[in-house]
Image (cartoon, rainbow, N blue to C red; front, side):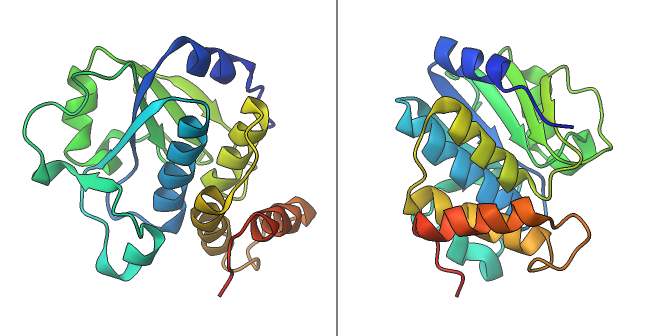
Length: 194
């Protein structure tokens, strides 16, 4: 079911600092979604930090050439201490957040979920879910559109990886004509499928 992004746009406009996170044992959709969302939010002048419950797997390090994603185990203190919004992408299950689950439970920041999975727990968050979406990366493209942010290569590369891998390189049943349109937009914006 399509998401009405008006509430999301409103909360972005009303807040300045965002912490993004995703599930442990991350795949390209998880990593690509947080990286793409970070670029989109920064394009509208927001402060963004990405902290995950586990380090990025070495075989997926290519998706984060700037080493933006921090691992909770490498930090001291509460990474949510100075943030307005904690945004969880590509999951809404406590068990999948690893050590970040305790951080999120303890935070006083507004909690937001952007996800395409059916299952999930009550994270006491505002949810933006579309279980018909082929990947969370596709939802991040929708966020960019809702915020009026033009796609660029820094957004397009991780988001292309997110969508391409979560659709099994455009073979899985969730793949539709929209998926190919998204892939076209992302390659036009600078993603390199190779």
